Amino acid sequence: MQLQLKKYTLALKHTFSISRESHDYQDTMIVSLTLNGQTGYGEATSNPYYRITTESMIDEIETIREAIESFEFTIPETFHQFLVDKGLSNFTICALDLAANDLYGKLLGKPLYEIWGTTTDHYPTSNYTIGLADIPTMVKKMEEKPWPIYKVKLGTENDVEIIRELRKHTDAVFRIDANCAWTAEQTIAYAPQLKELGVEFLEQPLKADDWAGMEKVAHDCVLPVIADESCIVESDVEKCALFFNGINIKLTKCGGLTPALRMIKKGKDLGLKVMVGCMTESTVGISSIAQLAPQLDYVDMDGAMLLKGDIADGIRINEDATLDYPKLGGSGITLK
Image 1 (cartoon, rainbow, N blue to C red):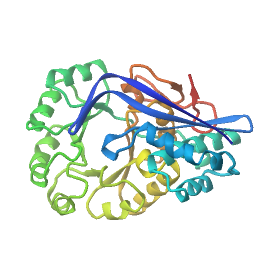
Image 2: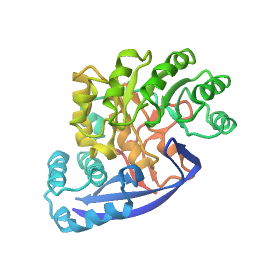
Image 3: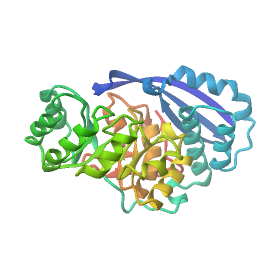
Image 4: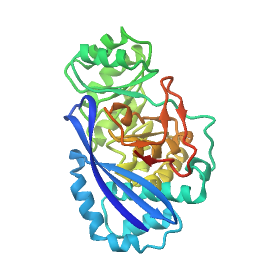
């Protein structure tokens, strides 16, 4: 296989803020793998919370470039295991695994969702994320992008009041993501008010390792709670089933599509609602997530919609929130 790496700095339409950080630009690494005239593309973004930079990912890959290029590629699963055995970080493995899956589908001439035995007849509607800001700015963002479901980032002293004000401007469903900013007591106290304001569920309200707090929330919260920072890899799913109503799988955190497929199955077997979420990433990463959409209860794949300009073509998210799947095989990705 021929391997190529490229770093991009993606400019955002608006400053994107969550409870622990803000940014106007997002660094990302694009991997391409070429074999027999076909090229697959994968992506992984930098992430300060997990101490991942594009430079660190590129360095990891360069140390095993020769082994990757000489690998006898057949199916994504054996390539993924090869990467795991090399000890790469999950973010780095993700980019390579997404590229391998895209390549695999293109070699077969079939989209991944079809290879996995699903169809695009039914899929959940992606939410659109409203980052933390002053209330007028958050309202303006909603007015700029009318959407049926908003994920609202919170983590302030007046979180319920923010939702109360936003509710005056839309009938859309709200999902709340506090990004670990609340206590168990706050979560339990806020939930009845938020439920009345049309909130569907809460995502990761507590710190990732606050299992004692999550036990209280599991017993007393009137809204469903979805794990994000508490559910990183496959081994986390079973523990999360004891404390959460669902899991949000991030491809970068778990190591790509290959383990995500196993996590989806395990989550469903345990009776959890299953969601796949995105980073602020280009259509390369979003198109990979879209292949999983028919298997999901919820999906958060708005990352490329938050950018000033995209670097790739693939899945298209229409103004009515429907999806246009590309006709190419794999994830259907082409770089611009």
